[in-house]
Length: 285
Image 1 (cartoon, rainbow, N blue to C red):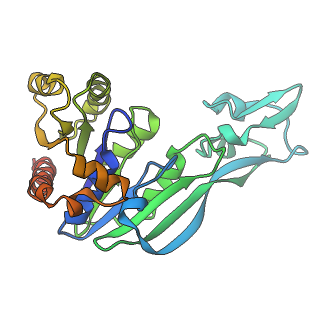
Image 2: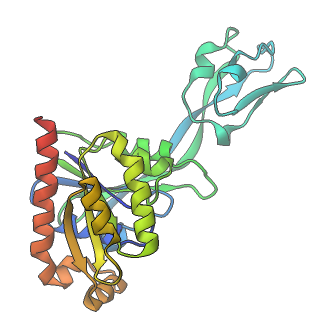
Image 3: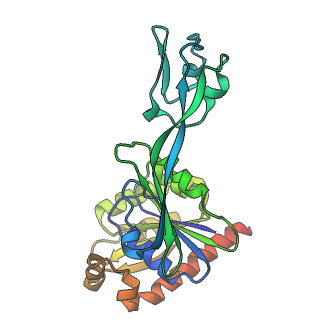
């Protein structure tokens, strides 16, 4: 089963939530940090035996002697990564999504596959799970291709669960992270910004028709708009984590909250139970 931990905005506690879940997860687990623009799950889980591999995306390279300027490739590309100007073929590798359509459609075989570095994939082991993360190359604008590369190298089987720390927000990277999940956990906080972005996340993810549950972090510091909205939309609240200075201090030391504040353990174990139950119910529906 694939479980995605997501949030409408940054700073809600999504990563520390993922770290706590990974620490208590009992079945075989691979923990994945797909927040490739700024991964930080490793700061809490502290993986060892690290292996790093560069990740690339296929981009076209042109043979000017073969190109006739027919524009078949340019007309096909939806991302304007390739065009013809004054009879000259121009390729913009940084805009290419690597679909390969231009290579297939060129009648003169004037395009050949090249590659552009996206970033790196880092894998290792933590005390409780296997660990994989992606880190986008500085200056690279597109994270979904690297996210797909990260996921493509993970063994997805019924014997092993996958726990994803998703990018925050509701943009393309966030949707890409939850697209293949069996269950989505939306982490939010009871503040005006938290509630506003929680609504955006629910509107973005609910059309995917996957089980979604809410976790309210720092519960008690604001109002009850999140609870009211969940009641109206029939969104189950799987856990509420109260504001606690001890949790904040553990976070600042780079510690997993559930190991430092042991009173949280029953809440997180119950959260895991509800996540697994929701995913199983949908799978066998």
